Image 1: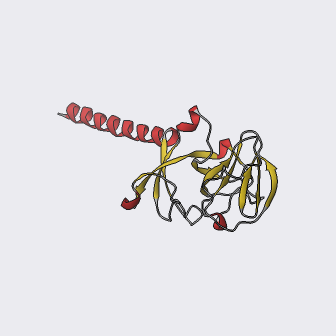
Image 2: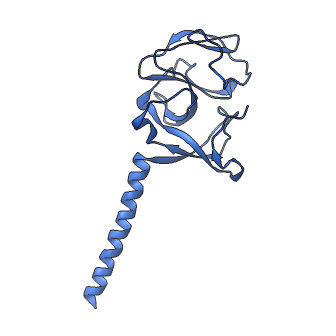
Image 3: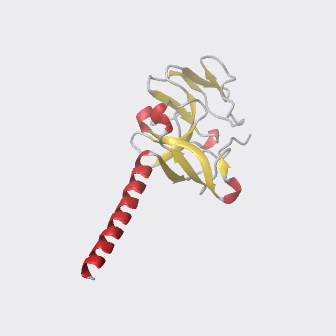
Length: 176
């Protein structure tokens, strides 16, 4: 009887331990969840929206223009959710609230007619990305000198799916 209880207890410990290990590995390497805080992505995302973040994609490919990412800013403890606007090696500047990438003004299709300040031409370093919030008039992003271009190793994952509130459930789409 005692032997049977010990075997059952060991079985439970192995089962629970395996579940915890699998959960740890998935959250560490495959996905995570995050909650939107603030209005910097207001055109697309809203405060308290719960997002599924894919951590695996960028192990096999590089971030692309238009991707919504979760990243760390140098010198900040919080994570930030922003849209990739500029890619490595591109030159970006803003004049009269229009974003120019390599001299072309038609690349930034996420611009939502916000009045934003001008910035002088900046060439994005290799391995870095220029990010901006969709709510351009209320976003701390790569336009700020304390943030600048985000290094690829500071990108935690790609936001791909909204889980909550239920009316936002589904693939994340830009609402113009």
